[in-house]
Length: 173
Image 1 (cartoon, rainbow, N blue to C red):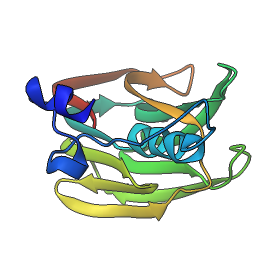
Image 2 (cartoon, rainbow, N blue to C red):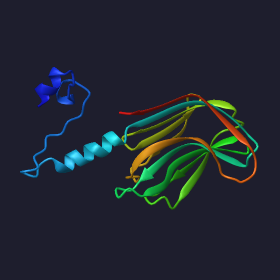
Image 3 (cartoon, rainbow, N blue to C red):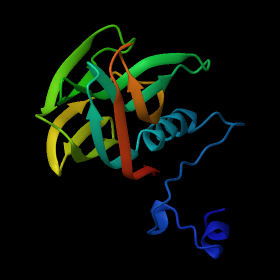
Image 4 (cartoon, rainbow, N blue to C red):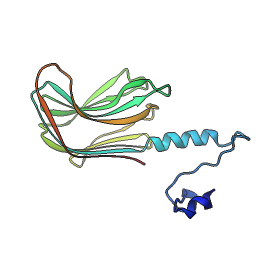
């Protein structure tokens, strides 16, 4: 199978390429655990980059999030939520598997236009604001399937907010 993939220019890692592979046999029940681990690892390599501008007089506006999903398809509260509160940029990070406990981390003062990069690789979450790492955390406890959300999500019933996305890119490697 590896040679067949090579013919169409898909090289697996064991042949010098970048595509991960795991040898499995359902008949012999071999490699299943390794396959599941690889699926989690590959699903856990995510990258969001945004160049955005926020103008708001609302008390709090969420801009970027990493949401989780249980294997049964039910939603989980966001692992990470980046929001502007009173002009400053904060991260709200779940610190346990069920999302019951959250840390609030100040990332930047007086934001207007800024760039944000959120990466999750090998269970390591990093958040860069304007190129500087502001959050670096092992999130191995977070075993949910994840997806990114970006937008203008006011967390209050008063105030007006405008979010302009000049660039928004999501990669799943």
